[in-house]
Length: 444
Ligand SMILES: C[S@@+](CC[C@H](N)C(=O)[O-])C[C@H]1O[C@@H](n2cnc3c(N)ncnc32)[C@H](O)[C@@H]1O
Image (cartoon, rainbow, N blue to C red; front, top):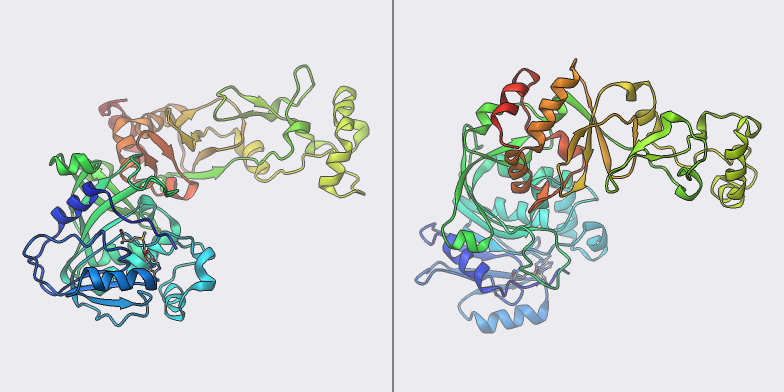
C-alpha cells in the first residue's frame, strides 16, 4: 500500500517552510501514515484533519495528535468538505491502480472512473486530483510525489484540473537523490501548487530548485509554467523561453515513431561474414555502432534464400518453428516485424532524426542508417525540410537549455534522458522558420 514515510528531516523542513498558515480554513494530510508530514509552522492554529486507511496507524495518529480529527478511512470515502481546506500536505501512496483495484473502496473506484483516469493510472494521481478539488481558493497543495505525473498520459485528467484552477509556485526536483532509500521510486519532486480558482493564463512564474538542499539554501531560479499538447504535459521553461519558442510542440512538426521489434536475435542478427540485405542495416542505441539484421520477410520461398543464409536459418529451424507454429511454411521469416513497415520501407528513405530514448549522452542525432531498433525512436518530419534544417532541430533538442527543460519535467532525471514517443511529441518546439536562429543562440 505504498507505506514509505517521510522521515527525512530536510523534506520535513522544506514542507514547513513552504506552508502558509495565513491561508484560512483547515489543514489536511490525506494519507497521514505515522504523521511524519504533519509539519506546521509554530503558531499554526488551524484545525488539523488527518486521514489514514491503516487501522494501526490511525490509532497512533489519534494518540500523537490529540487535538486532530483523525478519520480511519479511505481518503475517497472520508467525510471531507469540498473547498474546506487552506493547506493540504502529503506524500500519497504510489501504487499502480491495476494492482490495487481489487482492494479499493467503492468510492475510490467510482472516482477513478468518473474523473477519466484510465486503467493504467497510479493511485497517486486521483489522490492529487481529489486533494486539489478539496482546497479552498486561495489554498495550497504541498506534495512529495514521483515526478512522472508531469508527463504520464494517465495523469492527463489531473493536469487538466491543475491547469484550469491554479498555478505552481514552487517546484523542487530531487533528481536521483534517494529520500526514501527502501522505495523503488522514480525521481521525486516536492511542489507547492496554489489554487486560484482560475486557469493559469499568460506567464506564470514558478520558483524551481535542483534538490531539497538547494531549496533550503534559497537557490531558486525563475521558470515559466507551460502545459503542452493534447495531454497538457507540464513543463517549466527558463524565463523568456516560452516567447522565443512560441505555442508549438514537437508533434506539430514530427511523427515520433518507435522502432522495429526484431524478435529472435540469435537467428536474425547477422553473424560476421553472412550475407544480408543492405537495407536491413539498423541503428541501435547503446553499442553506438550500426547492427545488421537479416530481413527475411522479402523472401517468398526458402529455395530463394542464399545458400549461406539458408544453412544459418536451418540451424535455428526448431526454435523458429516453435515461434511461428509447427506447420508454418514461412518459419524462416523474421518472427516479429512490428513497425518494420515504418522503419524499413520507402517512408524510411525520408530524412529523419534518431532519438536515443534512454541515454545520458546527446539523445538526438541525424544518421545515415535506414532502419532502427531497440530503444531508438525516429522523428519523421511532417513538413518539408532539408537535412540542414534537421541539424538545427537536433542542436536545439540536444542543447543545455533543452536538457534543463527535460529534467524539470518528467522526461529526465539528473542528466539521464528518458521519454516515450508521446511525451516527446509534447515537448515545446519552435516552428521551422525559427530553428536556425534559435540553434545558433543556444549553448551546446
Ligand atoms: C507513502 S505513505 C506516506 C505517509 C505519510 N504521508 C508520510 O509522508 O510519512 C502513504 C500512506 O497512505 C496510506 N493509504 C493508502 N491508501 C489510502 C487510502 N485509500 N486512503 C487513505 N490512506 C491511504 C497508507 O497506509 C500509507 O500510510
